Image (cartoon, rainbow, N blue to C red; front, side, top):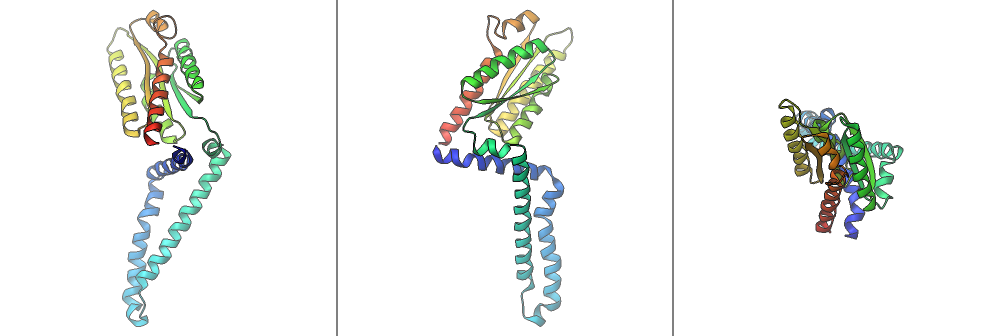
Length: 239
């Protein structure tokens, strides 16, 4: 357990940098493909023209130089990333802060409901000893992508996805509910980071109010409880 806690910040940084690398095609090509092209073109040309005359393996010479250059480039980019992290307090949060960090992403289409949901989730995370960061977005349909952004940052133990969808006169309700649930599930299954579905899917506003701490249940609190439980389970199994 102790060892994992010590290396988890480094793993978070490595995961974040890997995601950034995979998304930056130009950097990916320059890091992985150009060295092989350089070795084949320059090293092959030198070897064919001067290898026999000089009695020297220019392919090995070129490979060593390209390897050193690649290591230098990677180290330099890593240092730049660490400097940026320090300016944003990200590395300090990872290496110094002993508490877990959780994200809340909330669709604010129904403003009053959103505030109640966030209050319930925030209270639960803080009671669990965690720090909370809230990100507001327009509506429930955007929740899966917002959760993905939070997960890809590598900063959070889990994400509570909150919002409300109230049935109207058209099929819009069915599409939004189904795709939101599917998207959130997809994010957590692909990433392994708990992402709770805390979206109210109700027929009326009264039903929604009853489920935001108004008597029936508190959807925000229950979503946060699910995130905390799964995050602790993941940590225990890794320990």
